[in-house]
Length: 257
Ligand code: ARG
Image (cartoon, rainbow, N blue to C red; front, side, top):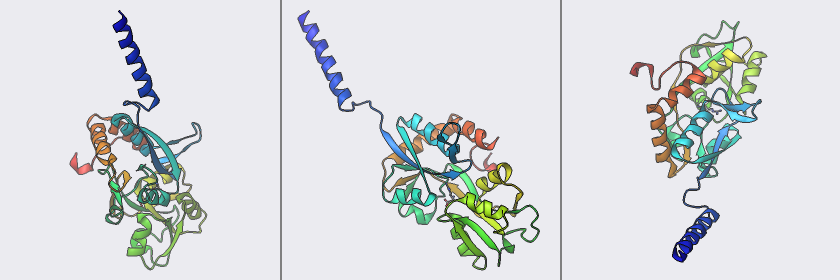
């Protein structure tokens, strides 16, 4: 009887000790850097006061699946990139295109979204029908993005104007201070359909891109996140999240269906 009692005490004491020092099963919490405004991937939901969007649903689902917690911090897009390089945050998700250049200083997950670049102009603009008409035009985009690089590389004759946030560029376009905006297809389409007053898209997708979740170099999280992402693709969770933000379409390129 006495033996049993002390054994119980021991178990009790040990579990208290474990709990006190964070215990074996305490869930890890990782910081996630995201952008402050990139519809419909991440934006502030004014009703809930929380960051919302496709990327937010995806990273929360990945965390659930992989068994860790996330603390989301929003910032300017270039802060997400530099926050990975400096190792200040554990994870970055911000519609970030996987590029060779970035991959030199940042690790990426497997691709989770197929995107590309597109041009928006004012609805009554007839001059600009594709990227071939950009010479001499005022073209806006967000600084530190693949669109900025694309315009510099392919349209040296355009007058490139960069903005800290893309909404400012769209507003300047609506106000007639810009002739065109170039940015990621899903964002341009979403903005034109939902917020953009009197804007339309023109031309084709200019450059195929894929988004990846970012990590500081050599992060041990890459593998866990890839595994969880694959599980969510296989079990249909990815598709549910996709449909919520973009409507019906299965994961992967149309041609692979
Ligand atoms: N995909 C582009 C890039 O990686 C633009 C990303 C912008 N993302 C954002 N959250 N504002 O450069």
